[in-house]
Image (tube, rainbow, N blue to C red):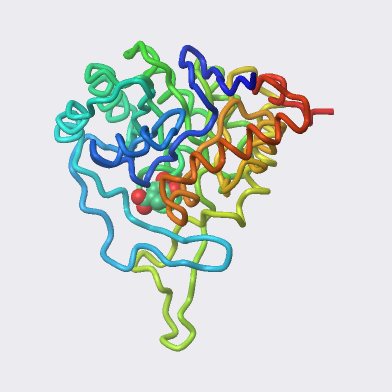
Length: 302
Ligand code: DHB
């Protein structure tokens, strides 16, 4: 018997694949579809205190080995989000609410509302690569990360995960700050700052000019960050970036991740990517005499 279960603090996942924030985690219908497809947990789209329109089009461009996007954190705001979440009928798969904000009080307020609404955990998005005054701009200073996490932890009783950016001098220092503030886990990595230029029009393709690069190309960056972080902290690390198959999951687990998130893989292959990845992971474990996920976690630390 192959046991795919894994733990993230008090959350128990029946398999280590998680839907990443920003894709198909917007309404109750898409959330339920991802649960049916077998995701071990779901991260919602990032939600703020107020509704937000996001940037004008184009907001997404396909490039070699992935996507660059700059959506601008469009979302209905926490009031409408809470109503939407009430409509999710299936509750056998943990739902992790992604939170963005410009200051500590905003993170706390949105996280509290998510806690009250019955979500299973929150993921603080301290790493959106381009929104002015949000994301990376609040999440690149360890002291800021500490304050936001500490205050959020004080006010809610569900686990707090912290999603970090690779677009910084030291992602490890940020992870250490999150651990000091008693975060329940860190998520690495958010997208990598990038740009695509249309050489005929001589202009950047995205309306926001700069966006975040995701997909296959960023997997080695994600694996490196997870490896470095897990050498230095003792709370769970969740890997994300470029996962499209079961072998990518094994690689992140060996780097030290306790679970992995999938975003671009869902964009390209749809919800079926979850069962494909699970089957490949199971087969690989069988072939290599592993019967528990926990035996693979951190195996590459030598
Ligand atoms: C957006 C937010 C992110 O955190 C990210 O990595 C990429 C894009 C956005 O909404 O624009």
